[in-house]
Structure formats: structure tokens, C-alpha cells
Length: 311
Image (cartoon, rainbow, N blue to C red; front, side):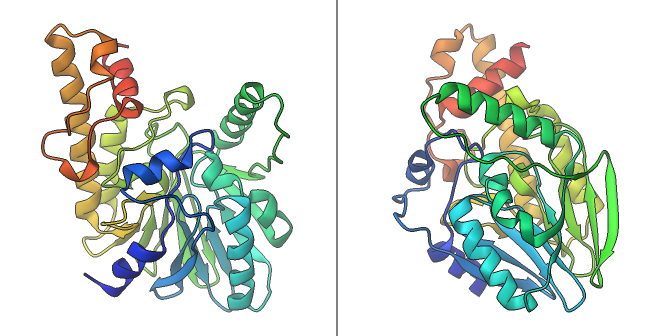
């Protein structure tokens, strides 16, 4: 096991892709209790690129004397810790770009914290509206709770975006609907590091956001296209990962995620063909054959898989 992976096992805090889901359930899935105080860590990967782990989706960063990029913003508490650490490392300069890989609250909840310290927030063109819609649904479901501040991207792209930021060529690409309908793959070309956002839940059951346009079938293709577009030696950053496997990896981890999604659709299709009704299928808890590290199947993945197969 490499040193970075070993450190992740003790420092990474996991969070679900959607802010409306109980964090404790995700920690229970990973086999450990949710921490009362989030543990955080800055971990270098390659060249000027590293990761910050805390509460929410894994943050990636590029820091050089000429430019700074942060990918995803986690939740407000750990966003503040991350921003303070970035300022210590970059000498207090403005962050050139904050990227939101998609709209979920554990990746954008920290946007208000970063807002005054970034020149622009960048995301796929679908993300701002998806973010507003999710906030509206949350407000409707919790009318007595104070509404959180929502900060959306002020710069967007539709298919590809590429720019030199402080000596590091940074490229964003949208491959189509997958985890949501606004997932960006972020490549730091010089460092040969790719941030996948929540396109990879490393050895964990993913969150499949059908109301936001998710497509499991296309998600499979997105992972294949991403692998084809990058080198065998590329290091990948994942939005979430189990305690055992961590939040960084290689092309084999993307292909493993692809195989898991393929097996999930195949399993649900087989249960439907066997004549089982939806209310029985979504309650199945046997582990998915060939994927024991994910643990028992859960309704959170079976329901969207059933809906997609029967759509």
C-alpha cells in the first residue's frame, strides 16, 4: 500500500453526494462511525496537484507561484479549513478558479466560504439550475430550517474547456449524463492527474441522481471514454471512497466502477425478467455478485436501477 493511500485510511471523511441524505448512513456503509469533528488533511499527489480530505466530496487543488485552482468546495466547516490551508500554501493570493464538478451540496456547500477568495467559479452549464432546483426541493422538505446560502457558478462550459492556469494546463470535459446531468471530468495535464468528482465512488454503492438526469447506462460509457482519453499512468481523484480503498487510484478503479454499474443493471434486469415486482427487488440485500467490497445491496441503488431499466 502506498503512503498516500495509507494516510487516506485514517484521515478521509466520507459524505454522501446529496446534502439531503444522512451522513451517518454512508459512514455505516463504510464500516465506521461518523466523526463528531471532521478530520482533514492536505496530501500532495503529483507536481503542483494534491487533495484535501474533510467532510464531503474530495477536494483537488493546484498551487503554483503563478496560479491556484481548487476543485470542489465540500461543506462550509471544512471549506473554511481548506481555504485557510490554501492561503498558507499560496501566500494569500486569490484563487484563480474554483471548479464545481457537479451540483450536489457536499461539493458546492462550501462555495459561499470560497466566494470572496476566488476570481470565478466554473462548472458545466447544467449545474447552476440543478443546484437551485435541489436547494428548492430541500427548502420545501424542511420548511422550518433556515435556508442555506446558495452560490452557483458564474462561468460555465457546455462540452469542453481548457486553459493554462499558473503553468498547469487544466481541461474540463462533459461526457454526458451519468451520476447527474452535469458531471465534469477535470484534468491537470502536466501533473497527469484527473479529478472524477462523483463519477467514481471507490468500492462504495454510489448515489444515482435520477431527478438530476442520471443515466447508469451512459455512466458506464463515460467511464470507458475517460479511460480512453487518458494515459495508463494517470492518477485519478475520486469524489468518495471506502476506508479500505481510499479516494485516489488508477484506470483499473474506473473500469471496476464500470463493471459494478454493468452488473447492477444486469442484476435488476434479471430480477424483473424473473417476474419480481419493484417492492421486492428494491429490498434485496444480498451483495452484488463479484463485488463483495460494496457490502449488501441497498435501496438507494436498486430503485434508480429499476426505474432506468423499466423506463
